[in-house]
Length: 133
Image (cartoon, rainbow, N blue to C red; front, top):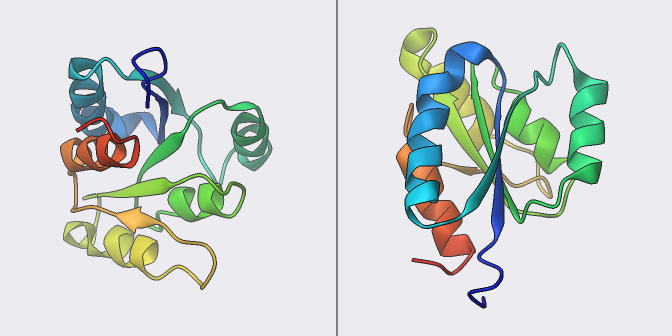
C-alpha cells in the first residue's frame, strides 16, 4: 500500500461501556498513522443505523467490539465483503459468551476474532491486513 493511502479502519462499539477496549485499538492504529472512524452502534438497538453506516463507510477493515451476545461483528460481516475483526468484551461469563458468539459464525460470514478485551491485537491484525506492519 502506498504512503498516500495507509488504509482506514472503522472501530465500532456495541455500547459506550466498550470504550476502553476501543481506545486501546485506536491508540495502536494512530501510532501507525492509520485513520480511524470510531462509532457506537448497537446491532440490536440500531440495526438500520448500522446498515447505513456500513454501506457508506470507506473503511478497509472493520473492528467490532461487543460483549454479551456479541452480535455486532457478525452483523457487520453479513453486510460487507471487507475484513471484520471481532473483539469480545468481558461483561458476563468472563467474556466467553461473547468470544464463542464471534467464533461460531456460519460459513461464508467470517469474523476474525482476537482475545477477550484485546483491542490492541485487533489493531495489530488490522495493520497486518493493511500490510502496514
